Image (cartoon, rainbow over all chains, first blue to last red):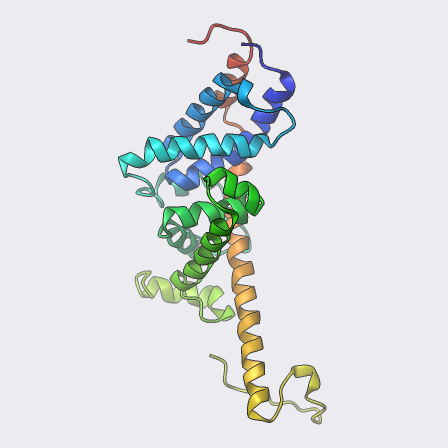
Length: 182
Length: 80
């Protein structure tokens, strides 16, 4: 198989986002990297079914999601390690975000139902349109919109955000004192 | 819940800018408006954390073994 260098570069350019999506699905870097590798093997074996000029990221994300749903999810270990290896892969905490707050956020995200989490990540983090996210998830655009809305509402509830002030260090301190269950 | 009002040393001026009105209906509107604003700020913050978390991984780039895999598969070699 000789791969068009343009196509190959499109694939490679998508890998970082694909990997971030995989990690958010698996909650475990090693499994996520296996999933990405499997996705690429499958994609390149079926590269003829990719229409040049169409959306390469959406195509690869669709394959990865289907693989995850069909194989990985059966193992029922997803998000088990949301704070272990996953945390280790995060090189740095974003400056504007406290460490505790960031950990709280990831823990809250991990508690979302998986369909809501993936919709939120596709739209809110990976920058896909609602239409692309619907294609990737194999559902209607309205379904994606409602999942994203429910995910946002649930996240705000889980983070017990009653006021903007709660985002500050005081909230983080209280969360620690309360054993993370404020 | 914010209840305390700021005491201003400057003479009171028109309330129009603050959106506060003395009647009950006006207060209801003010409250609803602040809830909407709070919702927007909360959601903006969630969006910011979401992207920060994602970008942290994206910024790690392509792991070497994956880059090698793609190049190898795309290069006519017999695939093991």
